[in-house]
Length: 114
Length: 111
Image (cartoon, rainbow over all chains, first blue to last red; front, side):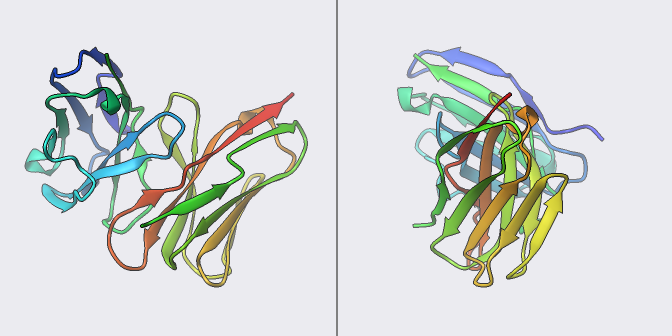
């Protein structure tokens, strides 16, 4: 079974630029999560999808972050414009149920904003 | 606010020693989950605990959830260098859908 795929693995941009991350979950997993992990901290949930609907986006900075999951499979997370404090690892995870902590994580995208 | 407190923040042990990591919630939980993260990589699911008093083991790692479902411990017996990494507890609160993680415990095992 293929795992959660993410791309790119690394990205360096200047502040005020835009960036997009892509995630392909495990086949058949209805729930998809995007997390932000700042160095030395635990992951913080940004947005959770159930199929192509949003379950929770209460911690997503909506003035600059957006996410979509068209057709309930792949997902993209965008930051526009980026700030220095957005430097972090962005993790995508998927699971087979909404209320299910057994999540499968991708390798993450390490973003550096200069 | 939703918080999971982990202790200790970091741990350095000699190979072969036992160790315990704790995770405490201010709220009663629907479920408590343990993950391991190797440096620079994604998280790997270890165990899920949902019943008060539940205990699960996998190889040399044992996790317990207290009766009140607010505190969990992760115990590693006879630690090995392969156990090194960051251990994170995660939780579903009883109310609400949002899943959240603790701050993590960094484990170093010295050969």
